[in-house]
Length: 259
Image (tube, rainbow, N blue to C red; front, side):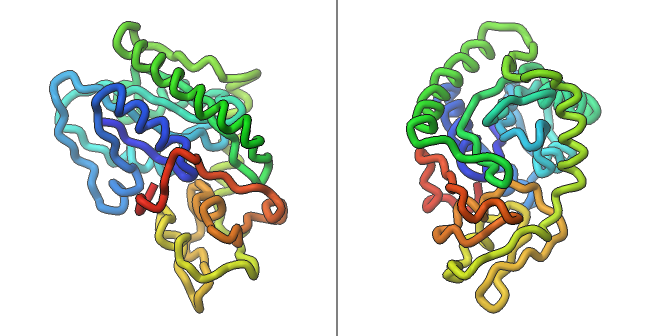
């Protein structure tokens, strides 16, 4: 059983690769939250996977909310796979503490480098770089499966970067205080298609007079609305208007309701 959260498709892509190699199933974390599904029956000795992007060098708030409510009928061990664009800092060790505080065992920690897409601060890499990273992810997932099968529990994330503890501590404070939706806005390119309303994982968007309005004060900042808007009409602050958008090309979101 692999639970995943994904705004632009990177973590969904990795979750699917894992599921294919492990002959396992994937379950959307936003769907679980929105449907109130937190209780799961497990097979004997079943390992539970969590696949998620790194947000401000930690877990996305929506993943923490899910873990807080998760109710498993049998003792189980978890493994965590985080996707990232630059480095992971202290995401893994902090996640291990979070799991421990909930009485859960996080036995393995992994990371998979994917195309960067936090466009309020950074740029999406070139198409060639994106293609190479997506291709390399297949080998990374194969290595993860081999470690899960053969190696003891441990932190196998080798992409923490410099001063991971300090970086995560500072950035997590920014994240907790900066999840406001006030800086989202829509420009005149909006066609009133309503896609943003349908795909928001926390139901924070509703169409009013044909235009998206953010009806909740905070959101996890997945940027699914921004990246997947077909007319690139959704902006965050003043630095995204001329930035490229990104959706994992291996994911057909037209076949997905929520990712």
